[in-house]
Structure formats: C-alpha cells, structure tokens
Length: 55
Image (tube, rainbow, N blue to C red; front, side, top):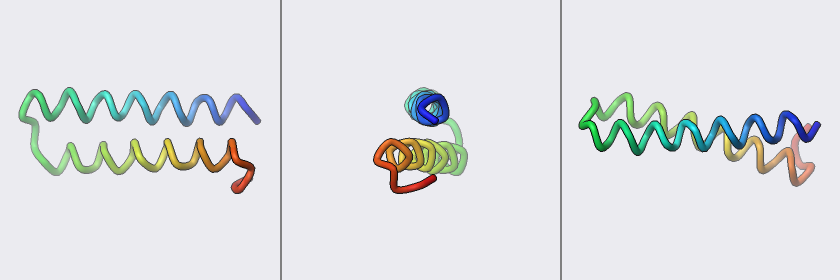
C-alpha cells in the first residue's frame, strides 16, 4: 500500500503549506489550527503506515 502512504504524506505537506500561507495572510486562528491538526494527522498516518505500525 505504498500509494496510500504517498498520498497521505503529500496531502499532509500540502496542508502544511496551507497553514504557512494562511498564517502569512492573517487568516482566522481557528482555521489555521484546524489545518495544522489535519496536516499533522496526515503526516503521522503516512509515517505509521511506512513503519508498518498501522494497517
């Protein structure tokens, strides 16, 4: 399932870029926090799948 790992990590990085962009544009803090949480969740899920700890 390496395709799903790649999708999760790319999506996490995309969302992290959104957090950076939204913070530069002075968007509402709640939106930035939600995007940050989603980004971290995607990156952690991708990393856990790569390590084989989560199927």
